[in-house]
Length: 229
Ligand code: ADP
Ligand code: ADP
Image (cartoon, rainbow, N blue to C red; front, side, top):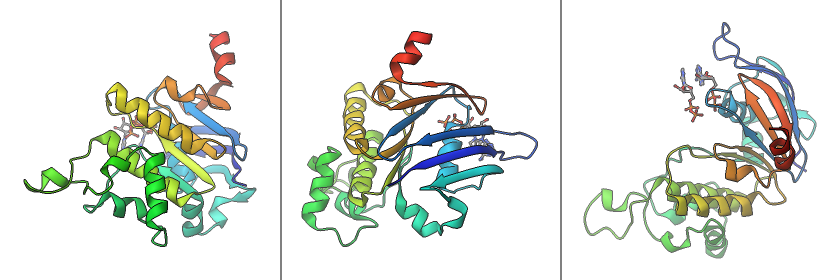
């Protein structure tokens, strides 16, 4: 399970200025749909609506056929694993940060999740580390490493739906490749909505939706879109 459907979704932060102007698409269970488009198109707004940080102004968002407004916030948030653009970690060990929200997980499960996200080498470090004082055992984590911790946390939670908002911050290409690999492994066979800021991510998506000014302007597979342009 884990089917997501946007049905004529409209949204405005400010009633005078519509941001999403009637969006309809579906993420079938187990498939990956990527949303691409210029900055300001409304991509991140889609992820905020699915996570119900805001309510739609019109239309509906359905998970497994049920309107998300009829689901409790806690069960909605348990069914969606969100990896945000900018991950804020607790000032504690990475192990703690990965286990957060899954306190029943065994050490072996935490380590397995860390391996999937390729963050296992850092697992005993605290996220702040050297920022606090000399002599700390921790390491200062880069943006990419923090995002991998967030990926590991999501892997451990194993939610039916994944919501990935790619970091826009400049990552070095090695880090970027590592995150890409981790995300690809995590999203395989899972219902995934990817807010994509880099073209490399979307190659494997089952469907690509091109958004511009709050409207779908094109959709299809990677190869079809390339052929049409
Ligand atoms: P991204 O383009 O990486 O998705 P954001 O989602 O953070 O970036 O922001 C997109 C745009 O929305 C930016 O131009 C930003 O200035 C604007 N924005 C973000 N938050 C607000 C806000 N609370 N009020 C007005 N504009 C905002
Ligand atoms: P994208 O992710 O495609 O860059 P966003 O969904 O972040 O686009 O933003 C779409 C539009 O909504 C932008 O014009 C942005 O300025 C505006 N916006 C984003 N967040 C807010 C906010 N919290 N309040 C008001 N306007 C916002």
